[in-house]
Image (cartoon, rainbow over all chains, first blue to last red; front, side):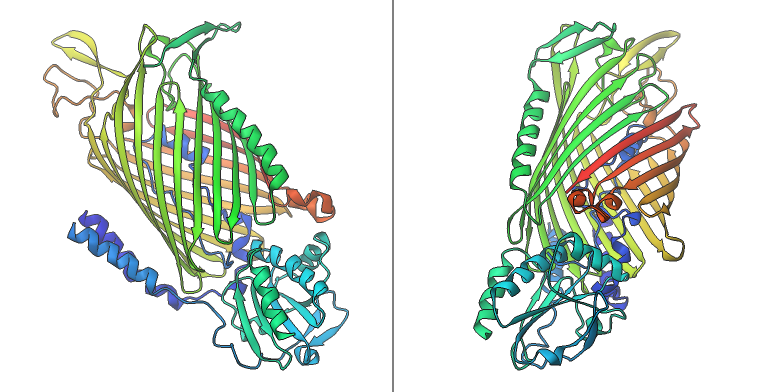
Length: 73
Length: 163
Length: 393
């Protein structure tokens, strides 16, 4: 619990730094390139992740949904 | 338990203080003038030339999924409402992508190309797509950030109120 | 308990069939949904069909087919459904996949099917906030997993920063098929919390930071695995016994950098993991993607993994059963290092849509072929071939 709250505190403290490097919505064309492999809504394990999880004692750390799109729904 | 509540309160505070929408500082003010070439390069158009008409400026890009839906809806509105002019300002790095998109989707609308992104910077667009509705006197009356199909009814009401 | 019957195929393989008809219960809805959605899909909806074939040099193979749909119900409400079917085949000798198998069939090739369904709703709350609720169910002959997932995503600074918090509760049924054909089940509960932060560093650079914490309680062993015990020269086997409690932590940082001048991207990541069983690991991965021509991407991938063993892991267990009597035959809990080299080619079918408006539906579809070579210092290696088709409208 201590570790989790420490991590949350660090992340919250880092959030304001995001205001220092603002990438405008009209500058995000390159980030939409499929070559960057940004994920979509379905954050499932890929086949590769499943392969490694059946051979290793570790799990997790890859549940990222992704973000950074300049689009509004 | 106390620590969990504290963490939860932090999260709620973050949600509450997150940034608000764009463009509301332009409301009630004269829309900044600009002059751009059409996307096919055949003509040049200035916003001032359209004084006397209700104008919708829609900032869009071919790489933005909601943008791909906003244009057909606005083009259809322009067909139905006399006195309405739609200016679709494209901000693709490569003009050809915008041209191809319009051709593939058979969209008939006045499309301008903001090559240096000067216009979109001046309007300080915060998300794509973004649309402003400008009255006959050149004043920004409504601002829309994002697009869903249900927004079209709202667009129609607002424009009809200005015509 | 669920009765299991057996049938011998013409190929000599033994197949175990379950009367609960899991596969047909999923296939029929998939076909119905596909037909219905094709008729009613509108602008703003997304639909995808993916199929992958995976094979390694250990003769393990997996065929995975998945269908997903994101259907807009209201202005900011999206209904999500994802259905996946896996067909797993493991060989008779040295079964090294995660697919569990009846112990009595360990000397014969074994086939197994798994079905997975995820349904959920995603609700936008204003321009910068999204909430999603999902229900997940995975079913195979001797393992069932049910979970509920809640996700809250918040954008800041004109969507330069995205913070996502996710909570997941899993209730698993870990089954064991016994000799008479019955299934004995044990329970496992897992709570997972995730915190993900995505930060744009420049128009071509993205940083992702991810932290997962997983709290597991219940039956955490493999019901089929046995360990060898040596008691003063007398050797025998016992069921493995893992602690019934485990907390797992994983933190990952990933940087994705686009290099427009050479039409390429470099993606690097590092993960640190540790848990209450004293397993610790580091994972480093580097991937280079490059456009060979428009719409064709070539990728090279390297992954290095190093792990320290669980505290109760031993090569030999004596009669005194040190460490609380815990004992494991799980190779995944050993100390080892591994390397993984991979290559892939991805063809983006959007090129076909460029000159033919009738093929606009291929705009987001792709074909991918991937090969990777995995080897570790436990004398295990595998050549993996994977091919897939992603069809999305």
